[in-house]
Image 1 (cartoon, helix red, strand yellow):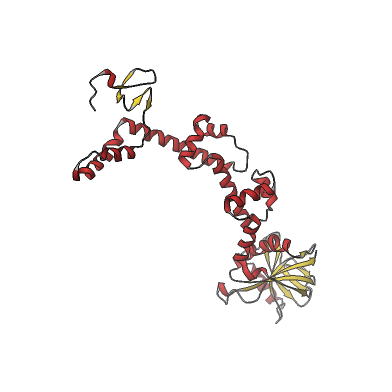
Image 2: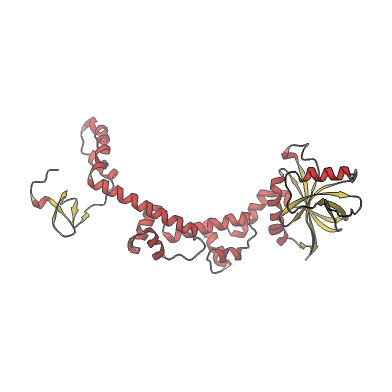
Length: 336
């Protein structure tokens, strides 16, 4: 509006008149009403008569962002978002460490007094609630995919005890972490976590002398077995699980003398928990981890000391579809 008297001007922080705003909008260096640009447009449109409202709204949306008030506010909001984004990155990188409000405010380059309010208005939740949510979501992912116990996760995420983490987890997800883990694995693997436990005879096997198997290991092993006439009607294709690697092996009717190409070992007889898996070979490592860290602790068995679990192929991966591939995971066990 046109301002033709000094008393109509707004005032700055020093109380002196400022020509950019009227006294009704700006006083002592602050806006009298903290309304957004959209709120102001909706308010002003009410006073437009007849069918011109839509035209007026479009015009206001084009012109208001150029006004100093809104331009400055938009610039400030943009700076706030950049500052808060730096804080979000810092929180993600230091999620498992203690974080003080003063430190986060320093990262944002905002005073601690204003930081908490600005963070909540930008993110929609307080700093404490945001950090706790990220930590609990991390715990949920770890319960699904890692062997860490609840106590270890509590220590890693800053909770004073396993019980404290369990209470926070249940409050947020509305389910205890132990029930969450059990229901996840049961739903994911179903009958694959129901083994048959029986005695298995010893096996003589050969495998290539190489530190880590590759995609051609099976081919090289079969070629060696064919050339040296080690294949029989009872030969089994096996992968021993050693140092988290799956080493291709072939069973032989007798113990083979080791040489520069292959090594040989005996898989001892004894009690084995045998899990049947149908489908992709890529899912076997995850299933094996689940057996060791979920099924085993709940069962009446423990892993036989100095033993070697292995996988046996029941059909030929090159002759069946991936979804029809059948394997068995043999885990040597003794009763607890």
